[in-house]
Image 1 (cartoon, rainbow, N blue to C red):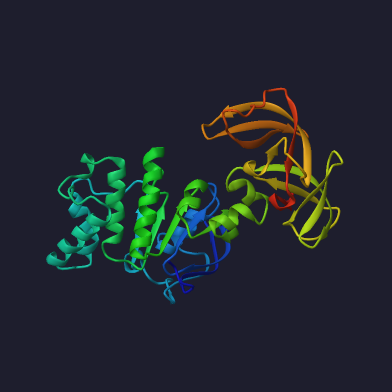
Image 2: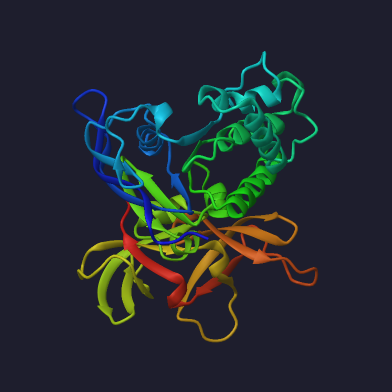
Length: 363
């Protein structure tokens, strides 16, 4: 469990490679001691550059990065007391697993006896105790990633950075390693900064997530906060599945707002874009929050035409045409005795105001 004390602070950090375009724009971010914080975003959003500046492999163009209250400006990477795990593992092929893990200790001139004890402990943490004498080429991808993780942990750093560490693994192994890393973080009380473009991975592992886009953190929040209350349409579309409908804001009254869709239908929603009657907005609706042929009263109801249905075991994915949006998706819980909508069928969908969020119109 993390406390509220900031271990790492970015203050007004900027980075440009060509002197003109800022890859990272005015980054202000505190990373709490003991937390698992993920920097999430598409390629080119600035997340990896931010991690590399923290690691010391890139130098900020402007601003300050501190670790435990001390500026990192003049501290070389090997003296920052930071463990780093990369996607390509970066293991030495001619060394055994034990020798790879011991390497950070040997360069720190730790005694042989202490090295042996720490390597054994690190191997136990990543559940590779029986493979210490093997070489990386004799290991699977998942085992190699565990060795890279053990090497990053063995010198007991203040902070562990992970840059897309699971990107080369297959889906099943990747999901298994997500849980393994999450448990290691919890059991050792580490502070972890993790970079990924995979939103599912970020939701699974993190205490908090910083969503990057075009060099700016769009939202810093818990996984649930990002999913349930995104700050803007970019976050809503990037985190999980999402449906968007365009309209015009007519007014905000307390906890609700009125949005007039382009076909004239009035929708009640939660305001997520501030005041400003007459402005264009987009309504954000998660697929599991929409009902097909809703029973009883519902705040919002719209006509729809079925395009296709896909069976997913525990649920059906129903793709609909809703007011010209022919990629509107609903997740319908599957039951053997429940009629499955057929392509071409017309029906109605319903959703409550609390499950619909009015956000900025996408650019």
